[in-house]
Length: 239
Image (cartoon, rainbow, N blue to C red; front, side, top):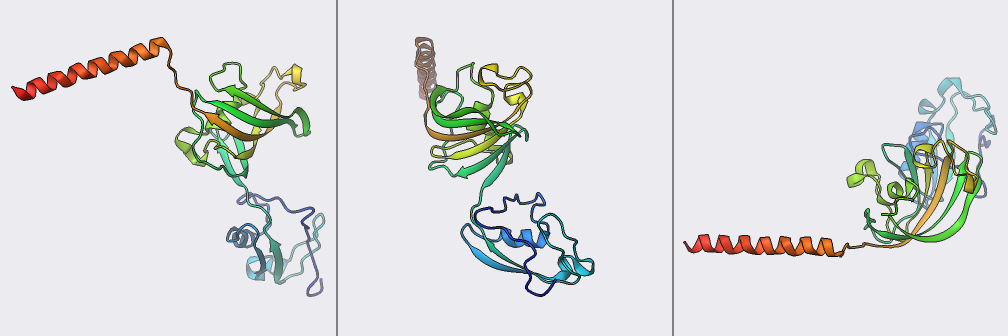
């Protein structure tokens, strides 16, 4: 095409949603340039034909016009939003962070949490759980399997799969094995073997300490034994 002709265009009303490393940018040099940008930044990126489409050019595909041989490509880019993407449960769950947490402390297996969440069936996008706010304990054995996984993250944040902090908002893709499995959830019109998309905001959480009589008795016994051991050591030192 002629010099200066627009071969591809996306607007702020219909932006390109792309994942680094997934091939969504068509050209690796273009992707590398975008990787250096900050959220909100506007840049003009020029790609040499040597690392673009060279002498072969590129035929028209979809809404993109054909690119002639030996064409320099110039991209005007406005990086609207950057999302953190990580993987939980050995890669089974995909987490896309929409808003970073106010605090980095995450719930443990005994925490009581307050979340605002909604759920969709994928890929249809049918809503099975409208947005609602709930408070529950992670010790509840009736909870869907995904809650501990998405709130607590990978052990020791392995592979960057951290849990959620207060104020954080994220979208999770949940496989059937961590969702409702082969039985589905008829009450919520979730069919068997459904992949789910869960949007969650962690409003707050509190650590719950077990102060039951049995636990307190064990602590008193530990303290008593520790005291006796210290007295014995002190006596041996005097000898």
